[in-house]
Length: 196
Length: 196
DNA sequence: TACATGGTAGAATGATCGTTCTACACCTGC
DNA sequence: GCAGGTGTAGAACGATCATTCTACCATGTA
Image (cartoon, rainbow over all chains, first blue to last red; front, side, top):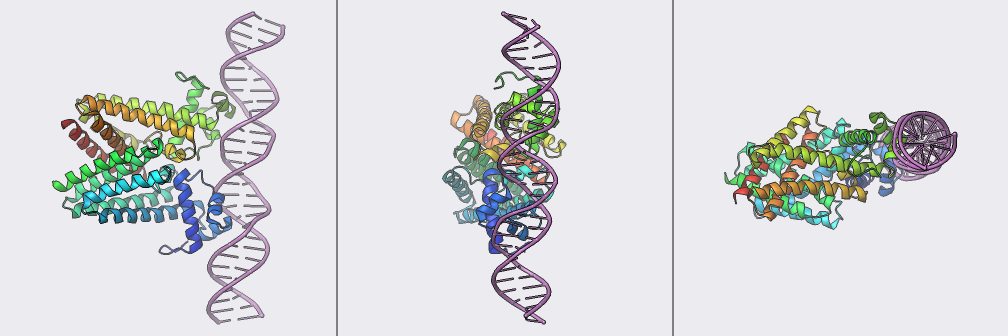
C-alpha cells in the first residue's frame, strides 16, 4: 500500500494522470493502459505502486484530489475580505476554471463518485470522506462567522450542493450561467445564515 | 430510428432496463449484454430498435427518463398548496425515494451526463435538453408565482443545482441529510424570490 | 404463393479490459 | 559479492466489450 502521507514521484504521476482522465470521462471508461500512457510509465508500474489495482488507484485519486480541491477552495475563500465575498470568489473562480478547460475541469471526484456509489464500497467510502472533509471545513467557517452549528452545517451542505449541481449543469450546457446563478444563491444563503 | 413520439414495447423494455443500469452504475460500466438480459431480449434486438447503437440508446434513455422525471417532479410540486410547499414536498419525496432504493434512485441522468459530457456530443446535447426542460418548467412556475423572469430562472437553476448536488452527497454518504438540508435552502431561495 | 417488413435469437468478430507474470536494472546493506 | 528491496518494462491471459452478421419466424400485401 502506498504510504498515506507521502507518495513517490512515479505514483504521483499515475495519480495525476488518472485524476485527469477520471474527471474528464469517468472511472469505467478510463482504462489502465491510457493512464499508464498518460503517466509515461508501463502498465506494470501501476500494479507495483497500487497492488490493489484499479480500485486502490481510484481511492487514492479520490483522497488526493479531494484534499487538493478542498485546499484550493479554502485558499480562495480565506483570501476574501469576509466569508461571503470569499464564497462569491470561489464560485466565480470555479466558473472561470470550467470555462477555460472546455467544460472539463469541474469537480475532481463527482463523476466517479456517482459511477461507483452503488458498486464499489471502498471507493464510495473514500468519496464520502472527501465530501465530509469539505462539508466540515465550510461548516467551521460559517460557524466561526457567527452561526449556530446546526445551521452552519446545513448551509455548508447547501452551498456545496449548489456548487456540485451547477458543475453538472455547466458541463451539460457548456455554459457558466449555472455557476453564476448558484454562486449568487450561495452568497444569499450564507448571508442569511450568519445574520441570524 | 425509433419513433420519437411513441416507442414499441420491446424498445421500451430495453430503455427501462438500460435506464436502471445506467442510473445505478453509469454508462460505460453497463454493457449491452447486461441490458439485453435485464430486458429479457437478445442483444440483436438492441441494434434492431436502436441502429445507432449504444449512443442512440443513451440518448433515448436521457430523453425519456429526463421527461419522466420532469413530469414526476412537476406533479409533486403542482400538488402542493403553493409553490413553496410543493418544492418542499419534492425534496422530501426525493429523500424518501433515495433512501428506499438503497441510495441508488437519485437523478436518472446525472451520472451518465457527467461521464459523457466531454466525450459524446449527441448524448451531451440530449442531457442539456433534458436539464433545460427542467429549468424552464421550474422557471415558469416561479415566474407565475410573482417573480421577474431573470430571477426566476436563476432561482430555478439554483433549486435544481441544490437537488443534484444533494443527490450526489446522499449517494456518497448513504444518508438523506444532504437532501433535507438542500430542501430547506431551496424553500428559502424560492420564498425570497417570490416575495421580492 | 412470393415478397417485404418487423422482430427475436444468438454466434462471430476484432478490440479493449484488468490483472498476473516474467524479465531486467539499480541501489543499499551485510 | 550477494541478497533483498524498489522500480521499470511489457507480454500473456481470460473475460468482456460494442458491433456485425446470419438465421428464422410471423404478419400483411400484391
